[in-house]
Image 1 (cartoon, one colour):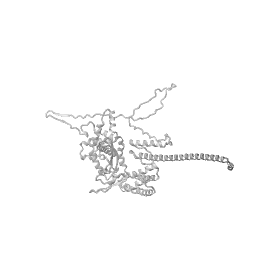
Image 2: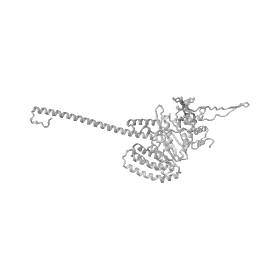
Image 3: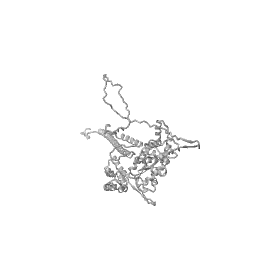
Image 4: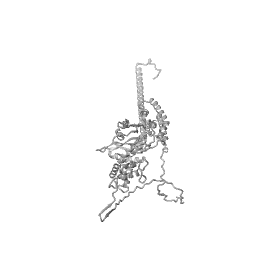
Length: 540
């Protein structure tokens, strides 16, 4: 429209036409503005959706990263609680599946292309033992004449080694019992049948021991042993192997009872528990049972661990096992132990005194360092690591010297840590992970610092966790216990095998000797068969 247009000179018809054009132009402009407004609104909505999705992905990524860190740390196998270790640990099959699933989800959430494949760390393969016999298998070219017609010259070799294994072979012991007769008096004399842990059975003690050690020390379930035996030409059904294991477990019960008595004679014990699947009576479903472990300390006169297979995790299990025992119990913060810390009402008035575990406290902070890079948690780890440095220095000292050393070196660090934790906690919001980690330590403070006043007390509960690890490594192979009785028999065998290992014994040699002596052993002889007292025949 011409801006110089004189409206006074226009006729009414022209004014109406002009007004119509203006209204139409305004309507078009209004429509364009509405369209732009809708586009802006859609962009805003899309932006909010993207922002929300990004937040959800961030939360999901943080959650998966935290779970992955926990799975890699809270696993059975050799643990390392040093921050930033990145060391792979032994995991059972279930944990490996969980880790694989989480890593795949993380890969879908975010792709890390910052590290070339060449930078990935590869384990260095150890050289095969030099004492093993070696058979050379040469691989020469089909022809050593060059295409030009010249004879090639040998200039060297590339050598690679592979580890081979020839399955063991079976043999038969023919026990020939000669019979001698007197024709005059018609008397027959014959040597008696030698007593055996399974009378009239076909297995030698060595074979029984091999089955037990393979199952409970090497984690080979019976169906796999059956397959191995079949490859060697002997078919030993799993039902037969199960019967042998059950019979041996029952035969070993008196020895385990004697070992329990020896363990309860010590003034300081460790305690821990781990879940194991058990078949429910009357159906084919499984329920969660528990293996409880009670172990002496590394400084005790008796070096042993006793496993107690029970259908529940209730605290009454610990109280029933400990019975009238009194002393210092090193354990985690599980409430099932709490009732045991009350003074006893018996005539001896024996008390059970709680000793806290610094490894559990440190674990709370290490998780935060690895997942959230928390500076508060990192500082707490520094404090606790300093306590462990002192323990390494005091390892070879006597109990009295260790107590004095702790008072001199560890007490100042403990006092400084307490003041620092209280100050940090006051500035944190209740319920945050850092606050919960600090609360865990402060709430157990008296139990955690109790080790300072007694050189016989350990700083943590790691020792018994190491002893309970074989159950976690083996349960993925055993799958489950068939019943409470079978679980208890398994606990008997595991008790002796693991206690033998603690005392530096070969479980195969120890268990074979024990099974040979048990059929003729008297109650008074059991003490000499305990792992910490055992000596091979001829070395007593």
